[in-house]
Image (cartoon, rainbow, N blue to C red; front, side, top):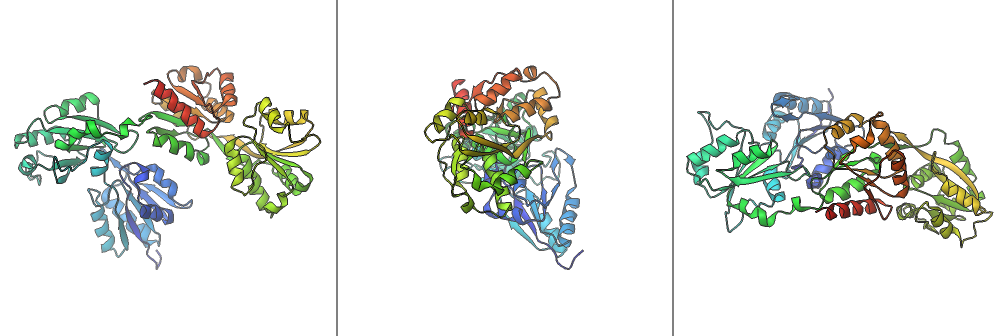
Length: 510
C-alpha cells in the first residue's frame, strides 16, 4: 500500500457501439493505470488504454460470474489503495441497473475517491437503433425502466404489475429474456391488453443486433422461434408499432455481415471503421504483423549515403513509415532529402508521404509493368541511382522494370511481414461453424499467411460459401496460386476501393 490513494472512475461504457462512448469516458480510460471491464462493455474500448495499463475482466453472464459483485468491489478498493487510478467500465450507464451505486458506496466506506461518468443506457439506445422511440407525443409521454431479473412469481415482489398494466407508459425491461413468459403473464393478468405491441432487441447498437416483434399474445412464441437469447431488452407499448416506419440501423447495406479482416492489427482500423459504418460485423484476425527487418544495416547504410541517390521510391505506407522511423532515429531531418525526386506506388502511399511534407513527383498506379513504364517514361530515369526501401522478399517486377529502363536500383528492406498466428484457433472455429460471410485480403502476405494458419486443411473446402475479397490483381494472383478464386476484386486498389467493391457485390445480390 502507498500513502497516495488512486481514484476510481465508474464509467458508463455505453450499449455496445464503441462510437457511443463519451469523450470524458475516453479520457479516463486513456489515463487509467487499471481498466476493469464487464461482459457488455465493448472490447474495442480497451484500445484506448495506455500500453502499460493492467486490463482485468470481471464479466458476468447467465449465472457465469468471473468475480462476484463483492469481490469486484474489493478489487476496486485494493487497486485504488495501491495508488492506482482505475477505470471501471460498465455496460450502459453505471447507475441504471449497473450496480454502480453499490460500488460507489463501497469505495466511499473505504475512503477511496471516485467519479461517476454517465453512459448511454441500452434502455434508450437499443430501441433507438431498432427504430423505436421510447416516447412519442402521439403514443406516450413517459417511460418506465424495469429490471427483468427479478422473479415475477415470488411472493415479496416489488414489481407493481397492476400499475405497469394500467399505465400508458412505455415499459422497458432490462435483462429479462429468461423471465419473458412470466412478465407477459403478469401484465395480461393485471389487465394489459393482449394486443399491446412488444419488441425484444438483442445486442442493440451492434452489428449483431437482432429484433423480434409481436404482441403480448404472440411474443413468447416468436422469441422461441427466433431462438433469441440474452443480452436483450424488452420494449412494451404502442411506440413499438413505429418500428416498421422508423427502422434505420438494420437497413444498412452490410448490416450483420460477418467479415474477417486479415490485415495487420495496427493498420486495420481504417478498413474496420469503413465496414462498420456500413453495418458489418468486423472480425479482426490479423494474419500478418509488420516489423522492422532483423538486419537494418543495409537501410541505415543507404540513408547514410542518401546524397548519392537521385530518386527515392516508396511502394507502400509501411515503406514510408519504416524508412522515416530509421531516418529520424539516425538524427537526420528532411533537409537531407532536398535533392531527391520521389515516386509512390498508389494514391494512399502518396498521401502518407505527404504527411512528412513531401509531394511525390510521379505516381504509377500499380505494380504492373505498363503502369511503371508509363509513369517513368518522361522523367529520364536512365543512369539515375534509385533507392527502393520496401518489404523484405517483395515482388521483383518494379526493380526489374526500372533496371530495364537504365536505372541503377538499390533495393533495401525497410520492414518485413511476419506470420501472426494469434487468431488461428478462432479462425478455424469460425470457419468450421460457418460463422463467416466474407474474408478480405489486402496483400499477398495476408493470403499466404491465412493459408498457413489453416494447417494444411483444405482451404477451398473451408471457404465454400464464403465470399473472398481481394484488394487488387496481385493479391488475387496469390490467392489463385492456392486454388482460391476471389469472388471480389477491387477496381481501385485501395482500402476504399475494397470497401466499394464489397458494397457493390452485396447490393447486386439483393
